[in-house]
Image (cartoon, rainbow, N blue to C red; front, side, top):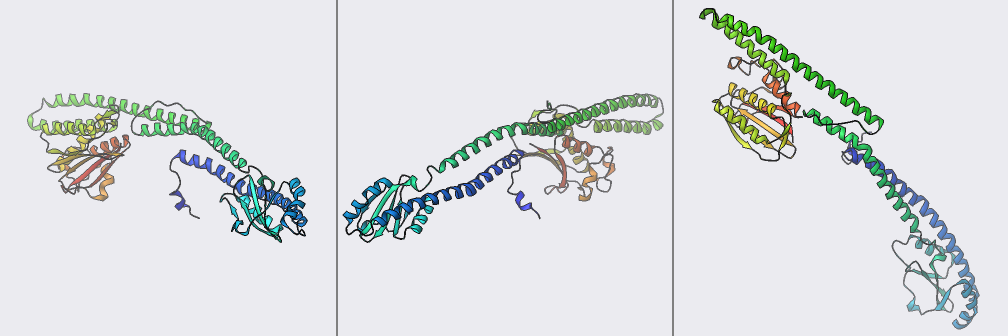
Length: 439
């Protein structure tokens, strides 16, 4: 059996689901107790008490049965009605109500009227305007007789007290349980917030707390975070050492080549320069977005700075749109490198580039479009892999890269908890690259 339709109506947050698990049994229990216990108990008690009153009324009516006048009937039954606490009075036909009256929420009144009518055939109307008195109208040989008596004689007093107590203590215990449950769920929420921040490249202070299982998960996260940070640090140190070790022999090679003739020197110097660029680009890829820290900055101002620097270098790039908004937690150095990579690719494989910064309530989008040949959809996944050159779509002669620019940009987007997405530029006809980051 599939319950997919039920998921649409279920709370999505952990607090909401926990509250539902807590409140639903309490409400169900109260409803069951109300229906099963209250209805059956008070209905049985009311029925038994009404039968007792009906027997007393039957005895009183039998004593008045053979008397000739209303006055003699009242005189003969005065002692009995006084002892039974009945108030008797003969009324006119017009004074008799047309139908039985009770308040809409007086459920015990249904049982009272039904029981009295079943025990006394002469009974025509029962009035129950409040919880204090009842008036029963009986058709006798001498005329309509109104018999008034106290309501507590036929139904239990204050039957709502059980409901009030049950609802009060149910709400009280639910509130207490909610605060306790909130304290238990708070460490889980905090762990999720710290884990999400770490996925965005931020390291927030955290210590494991809460139940044993939550503490175990928190300690496991701290150990995992420490291992990842240690591996990143070791990788950066190793690559820095490799870069330093490779730069020294490359420098010696350049010095040695400078002693050769121009015909032999120039091709070899180009090879050495390509090797240097390869080492620098690989180092940038390996370091990823480790440089710099996240801080609150303006995405639009950051994009403007990158574009101004590119324009000073003679790059044909313009900022077409920049939505303003609140400051966002970004790594300025990493975002700057990602935009420079996208703009460099755009002008390398096209003639012009356009940049836009779009904002919604939940996302920040850096969009770069060009007028080049574009990129086939089936190559979008391969474009972000390291050392992949998409020769059929992007001419290798247009640049000296080794296929790490988009891989670096993709890593930076992931470090911010976002993604790098490609598409076709509807305006320029080339490639549209978007860095989508959660606001």
